Amino acid sequence: MRFILSILLIFLFLKFSFCQNKVLIIGVDGCRSDALEKAFTPHLDSLRENGIYSLTSWQLGKTKSGPGWSSMLTGVWDFKHNVSNNRFLNNNFENYPFLPNYLKRLDASKTSALVVGWKGLFKISKNRGWDKCIKGKNDNDCHSQIKKLLKDADFDLYMVHFNDVDHAGHTTGFELDNEKYISAIEKVDQKIGELLKIIKNRPNGKNENWLILSSTDHGGIGKHHSGNSIEERKVWWIASSSQLQKMEINAADPGSYFYEGMPIDSSIINFYPSIVDVTATAINHLYPELGNNAFKDWGLDGKSWLNFQPDNSNYFFTESTTNFKTQHSKYVNNNCTVEITFKNLKK
Ligand SMILES: [Zn+2]
Image: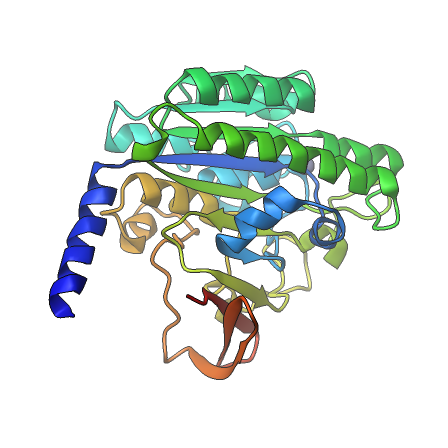
């Protein structure tokens, strides 16, 4: 038995050591967590089922696009990147640069490409380390551009930003009973389905090990966002890869770094995935030898989820249920504010 296990471990080691690690980040602007749940999104669901996800990935900064995408792409919260508007004025990207800068710093040959649907993010992203930076006219154009890059080019890290969900929210309402808003989310999901198919069929696909990260910068309420309501701050987060444990994480509202009168409960924030974790998790996938200490040394607020294990001192086991497909094991942390459900596929 031990011999078979050793062979299996050697096989897995060889398989992943010869594999080229790749990352795709899919940003969906202005997509409420509860709206994602309501919409028919089989492709995002498949990503959720194949990794770690949270539908309570609280946005701790200002619920505006400039600050939101800055947090995701720098791995730090608003009080460090200093962006509070959509013109990125007074930003502190000198000290907290965008994700591609870290890749180049670690290995100048690592390459990245960004396709973005929002002009503001495109303008600030140009000349910030991306080897390719493309502005799409709309989601359809962004989709064509990223498809082309995934088919014909070979970057280590890709990111696509879809803007139409946010646009639907501003023009018709960020509301669960607004069919136009829900339908915009479903259209993005269709596009994501095509991207996943392309990744699967890439010429060197068998030798590639993909991590797909997806999240949003904020939710919305009425036809607006940038306030402190739950509808605006409760967002979602997905990391999908065959190497990740399958788990769902639910966290109570920990407060906000930005809005007054909402002090942060620091016992919660380290135990659920949030937008600042995108940068650390993406870098960690491309550099598996790095750990969370390295990201802390760089001053990042985000952490990597690649080797996450619930720590016995923080979590205790509460229940286990089995249905025909999966076994769920639930852990709750000591303050009962974060709950992890492991989903183990039954053999
Ligand atoms: Zn936005």
